[in-house]
Length: 169
Image (cartoon, rainbow, N blue to C red):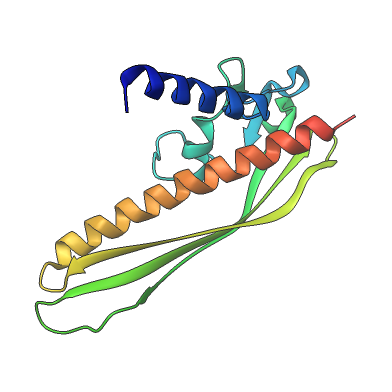
């Protein structure tokens, strides 16, 4: 196939994709009414929490406040549960695989206590392999998986919150 023909086909494919309405998600559209956010139990020094992952998704104008009375939006994790289960045999010095599941129930309310996002269950799973003899690597891998799951759940939560905020009167 000649370069010209390949270029024409590529351009045609790009036009079809853009013509069908496809576009990248882009930045979160954040309403001006919710510039001050309070997260119940948030500790900015703990970088492994769900809240720390959520903070990364806020646009630059959003301020995290430490007093609920100053908040326009209140985010609360109602429950968090992490489980792991083995999915392959546990033999000496053989690779073992586990599935880690993280489930959270999260809600968001405005300053008047009106639900913006009712209690919502978010769940993600991730599997990982490790050598049974290297227990330290299992611990480190498990922490990495937990961190990645929290990042994914934070993204899911923020997309749902953004959609709920768009519907608000």
